[in-house]
Length: 115
Length: 113
Image 1 (cartoon, rainbow over the protein chains, first blue to last red):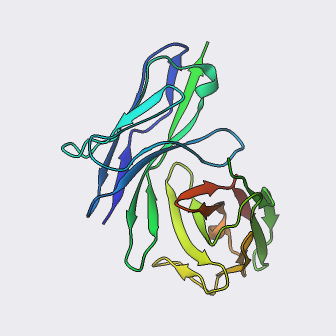
Image 2: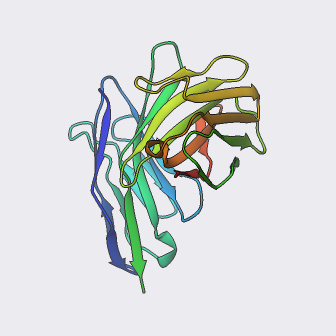
């Protein structure tokens, strides 16, 4: 079946540090890959996505590259801010029989950025 | 961006009672809504997919008679947990799809005592 594995948290960084959150996936077919972010008290928001191999998704200084050869979609940011503190979810989406698609999520990684 | 709301944000109920959770798409019409359940430090697990005006499609292992889903309009879906038990305590999250993107509600924390 389809699954997503991401590094456990919490990840604690100082402001302006480099961020990497690892994500690997297992899927049949050709999934689209996503990173969602959940700020305290809010719903999940789409951060970035990539729909095919070698695509790079980017938004708000975050980026992730769809690596088919390593089945990975690691999230990176060159310089984190306190406002980036949140829970980050890696997810994949694949078209299901009958149409439509279904999201499969990783367990989420909590990021804490300190001054 | 599109906004999805949930009500209530948290609820405590006694074992054996039923609880209804509402999910609304505030500024768009959603033909498809999804209900997820999240346990601490675990990923979101899809419970069911509901399409407006038709019966919900439940994931394997989810009891459709226990988790009643109604999607009567393009902006409202409800999840009713019937005869709740402590093991139903969890964080329930809804999502609504607008074209190809899903938008998520803030979640509802259910505690059954």
